[in-house]
Length: 337
Image (cartoon, rainbow, N blue to C red):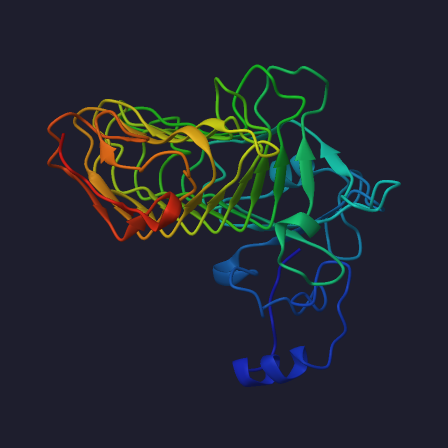
């Protein structure tokens, strides 16, 4: 399953323009030439393929011999490997891809694993990518539990509809990170999370540092992201260019929560927030910056203070709010109240 590419970068870019889109997307051209991506088979790592339409878990996991399930590919992969996941066919109304019904778990030893969704059109829109739901109805399992550091998720949908009792995606961590380090250095790019619960959120991050959630959509999530700041060191996480939507025009409970503790040097940048009871909650002792965000709040001026819809610690001096606007183009300010 080794991924490599012959020839120089210029040759690859020219070749890419003439090769039609295949089942794993336009950027993957064959089992022996997948190097036009960012992660394919670099530094001696392997590339694996999942196709729930035509694959079998008794296969080898290669381009022409893919696995059927995502967990089989995870189990077969080593640290640093890349897994490409093909979108399933559409449901009868042709409006939404069918779903991989799996409870996924990335163990501690699989550090730097990459899970990347693709589809036959080569589109990078998460709506067209693979969708993941729980294996059984009313399950108490996360859609995905990440124990390993440096895990990368891209172009995937996560549907929490069946998941009423626990987290959507759970980046686990512990002080010292001897056995739980999923909250260290993770990246989650161009993904969509739907139907996050009011208790456990669409994405839950236990402490950690250096994680990034970028260009993701939170659709119908009562609660979006929880950066559990009371687990050391909990530093330097970034949430950027994400879209936090309502629940069919009804207000959500809370889009982003950074509870009281030691959450430091986090950044929330360039995000948009539809109606919510509270947009962002920052607990005591937290420090970071909220920059260039938009808040849909037409009923009241959105002010970043201890009682507003952006809830900051009282007499706050450690959280900056810059370049943000609320309903009616009202400037969102940090008044330190």
